[in-house]
Image (tube, rainbow, N blue to C red):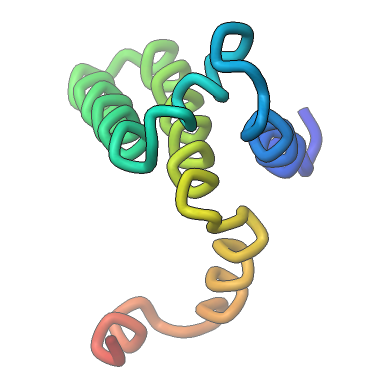
Length: 104
């Protein structure tokens, strides 16, 4: 796995925005709107939480992959790019999480 796996996935999701929903799961999710994408992300997040609590490493790994995919779909549904999120993380780099939260 390379460093740009998430970037490639984000590019694939962006490319599928205009695809036929009958031939692409991503296009199908996006065609249902941002609310459905958010709902699906939430479902996957809950499943990841369950596996984390249960301590099943393999299932948690699989669910975490689902979470990342569905997060990128949800972001794409609202025209937020992975680069936007990475820029925000870069902005926060080196800043105390406590200080960052207090500044909100």
